[in-house]
Length: 212
Image (cartoon, rainbow, N blue to C red):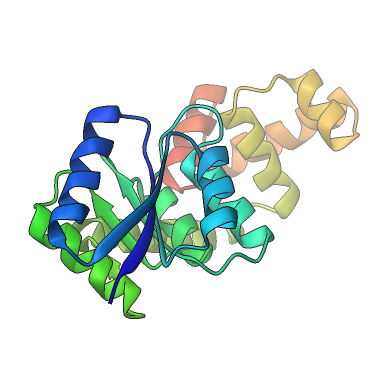
């Protein structure tokens, strides 16, 4: 059994180390080494490997953009994402895009090989600490969204998000196709409902409830 793999990472030293690890393992065939998402996609289309091991943080087309394109093109190569820091939102999006494995670069080589073997066999492997953090963050967002929906209207929630993004009244008005006066009225209602007096307070509220 030989597992054909495409590697994608923009750090040459780490790419060399991972390449060497797989070759020494004996049952992997590294068919391509790439340095960004576009190269990774081209290699997957050309070689149709069993596995794509891809870093999420790369210049140009990053790993997440490559995953979206991979799915859009209907390429069925199993994917393991590799990163130094696996943010909760990245993990959740990667899982929605069909990623079967996620591992941190600090993991011991033995566990990396175990992850790749398990994903190749049709299983799933996600680093436990990252999963727990992602699930907790998702639960906080869901609870926050329920609480917000009981206080604010959908349009007011949109305004809170835009204020939190730093948009001024004129920009909000243009985006929502309403007048600045209407924006001011909405904001006045939001301030009263939330007991907040400043835009900084609105941003703080949005962060606490997971709206941004």
